[in-house]
Length: 80
Image (cartoon, rainbow, N blue to C red; front, side, top):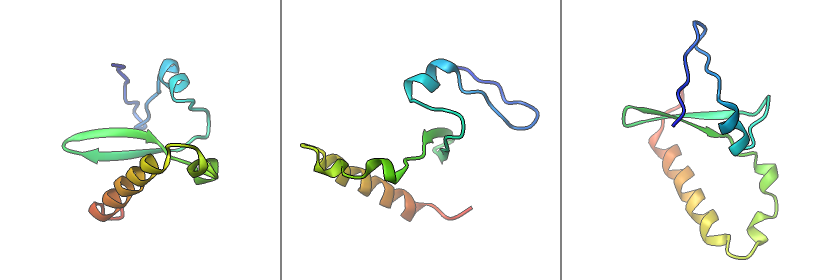
């Protein structure tokens, strides 16, 4: 577990160890998800990077599950 501090401008610093683990770099976008009194940050998936990934062996089920999760999230959320 990593602890971060909120600045007076509402900013946080993601520790280097976490940035490296998730291959985050300057300019990357993260999605802030609020659920059950928690805040979760997750990298925004660039769909262009997924081009052709469905052709890899064994990925069809994973992609179907991801699509279902995204659809479920979109149905349950209202625009900001």
